[in-house]
Image (cartoon, rainbow, N blue to C red):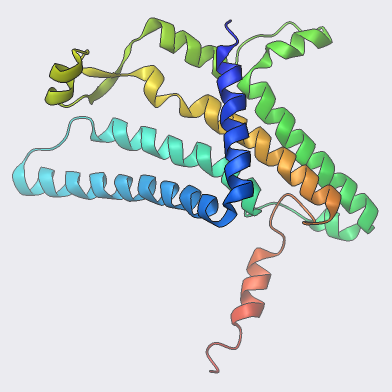
Length: 225
């Protein structure tokens, strides 16, 4: 398997790290807005399909595939965003029941496991160094799709793009699957960030703790006002 995808992913992570250091608020808004755009596009396509089908007896044949892929992008990007912002739900009863040092150690272990999970799914060939016969991962799968060059089931380029660039009608599968290695690289990167933040005391755990209870406490006096 070629190693150029690993190199480009490292460059991407380095660029994101640099931009977040220079423009933290803008990068956070960009990430949020990008996921909002994906969600809004899913809603727009779904609503348009309802109107087209029941109002005009027509519709977009690629709507289902588009929504499925867009929702996949939303989930995959949401993994790393949830770790970054600490909004993943989890059970914190053990973390709150043990002493602070043990709680911190468990949180660090959780962040390390999340990073390891992302790296294994990204490229599991490095596990062979531990004597385990295994191969595969998102990078290898994406490279295979890139070499084969097959298209999606229904998604097609507009006619003017086909004529302008002289390309096949169907959108290449590797193009829509590029989110797989990118999202898993981001998951590992965000897990390392979370590990560092827990280590330095900037945050206490990887998950959100008592989110519902905190919301109730913050808004319990709203009705009185």
